[in-house]
Length: 79
Image 1 (cartoon, one colour):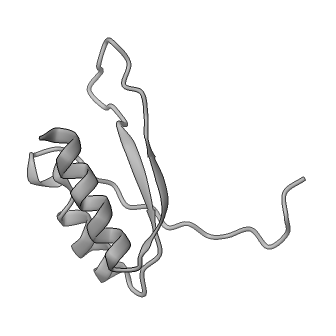
Image 2 (cartoon, one colour):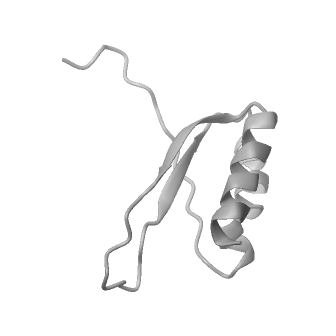
């Protein structure tokens, strides 16, 4: 059920045309107060749209923490 909820969430983001990437991350055996279990990279027209989509994340619905960060692309290719 847990991973199924994230798969469905990812499909919702893809169908909305906003998903640009993401990954599940390995959770350490000893979980601390803050654990990053994965991330999604989205491209939205507004911050309000990003907020609305993030509120639908399985973690947000289960009392977990969802954090949004703006991503500014670099101007020059990295070498």
